[in-house]
Image (cartoon, rainbow, N blue to C red; front, side, top):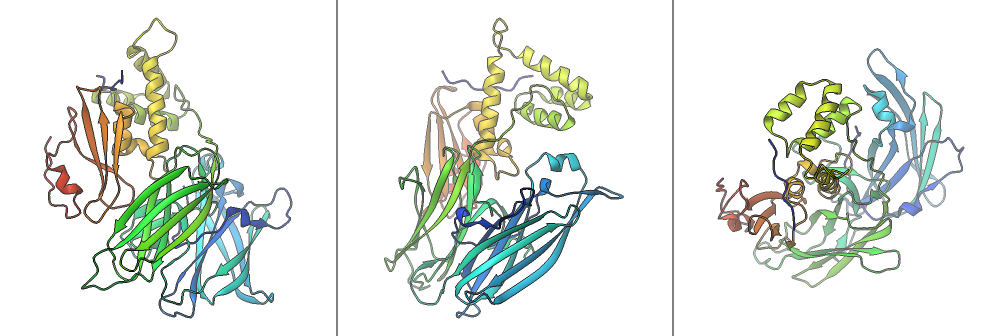
Length: 470
């Protein structure tokens, strides 16, 4: 029988638009074994101001722990120099740039033990054609150098046929109010993923692309356009199909922003495929983007806190099942006291003390990790436990059934989770109101959960009701 868990008494960012380049195309020059490891990708977009040109965006990343830091009056500092050159097929330099980037960190130990990355982006107009890009990065503190090269294909976006831009793989998407943020695009702050790699079971793949030359007649446009997403493996078979959604046309072009759950994919190489169809003209276009899924490198949660950072993680874990009084008591204790508190807490809540293992603790830890893997907003933040879906999963476990309803012209994207063996049968309604893969609970029949008998009106794209009862 399904169990319900009851309550007991660093990254430097930038933004881009993208296309589909294989990580396998990254070709590093022959460098010493201690050279800096770089990641480089690019994307090309339609340049509306001048149809004879395209817009090229180049972005790179390197791990912060690879750099050498020098003690400053406050914190630790590092400086890197960068040289970027773009040559045509004749070997002539078309564009060239040299610059330096400095950063200051307060906790050097945290940087050296994390996977935090420095990510940056450069953009400029360029004529269609084939080019060769080289990026050289030098750590001025250690004199270590890294070089990476790419062949760049810049398409011509002239013409009237339905056409995709490149697809940008991203680690995170966030709504962004400021128009001056470097990573801002279509009202979103997009953290690119130049490596094109994701960790197995860590949840979401975010993407951005643009669709051009939709047939648009403001007075007569009714059918909209469809988008479908699928993932192919190295043998060409289809391990995941995300269905088709139909959107209304904002104009002759549209931004494509989406989040796909890839937590079920095994480690390996994959191809993300996007297909768009203009429902008025019947014209169809596709675009694909390679990516990799790696074996999970997550560290097991410590049973007892060894550091204050561990103590914070364990405190978060208890927040759904410990009482307010217990959490207040925990906050007042020193590290040794918190260790004892954690030990005593699990002993008090061992369903069968006669066995060597605490079944409740094991199940709770498992749900906690799965919630972070499945529902985190990014692999950087790992905040899946904070989300509505994460909280419900942690407390109630795997649903007996999930009904998924993708976005359509008549309704927003929503899900219904059914639990047949809890409280005589209950369900939860989650709604993706913004269209970015962030689902929030709007109604449930479970005791103590949010209730809105008119939740169907919020699912409707007109959003007629905001009435919520508790």
